[in-house]
Amino acid sequence: GAVVSQHPSRVICKSGTSVKIECRSLDFQATTMFWYRQFPKQSLMLMATSNEGSKATYEQGVEKDKFLINHASLTLSTLTVTSAHPEDSSFYICSAIQGAVAYEQYFGPGTRLTVT
Amino acid sequence: GDSVTQMEGPVTLSEEAFLTINCTYTATGYPSLFWYVQYPGEGLQLLLKATKADDKGSNKGFEATYRKETTSFHLEKGSVQVSDSAVYFCALSDQLTGGGNKLTFGTGTQLKVEL
Image (cartoon, rainbow over the protein chains, first blue to last red):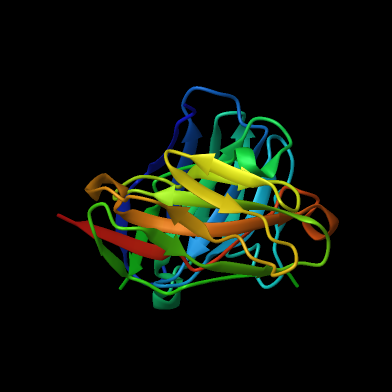
């Protein structure tokens, strides 16, 4: 089946620094990628939807200047957490779809971000 | 807005026991319903889906029936195996509010199956 990878799987950074997380579709071209955030024992919360070559669409309450999303190619999207703070510590998950149907999302394994 | 509520875990069962994980939803439009599974260290995988009322989704021995009258989509399996140990997420997509591309997830239920 379709495979989505994320890198890194874990990252620890100091408060005030920026961190980039990569999401790659390994064996298909992803027209749309999604970024989620998951807190312990809580749902996956959609942060933004990105389409290749265009600006990401952010969900209400998500700061677009803090969570920069770039979808420069059909196989790569990046999420940059700028000026990270301890409250940004979380589990970030990306997913990708080939077509237009939501349930055909293929998920990455997630990235654990810890801000100290 | 749309929401999904599923039972809290962890659920611990012995091998070959019957499994039920409850899931109920609220939605503005006519949602499609899904169960995703996340094995340790891996990404979420679609387990099964149902797109309209009374549909039954099934896969790998798991089943769930879309019950519009009770707004439920409970996951069942007749005989669980140790390899079924994972976190299970109930989710919906609502064509009316999300254009069909937005998934709303429950909190996930961890299943532990013991020998």
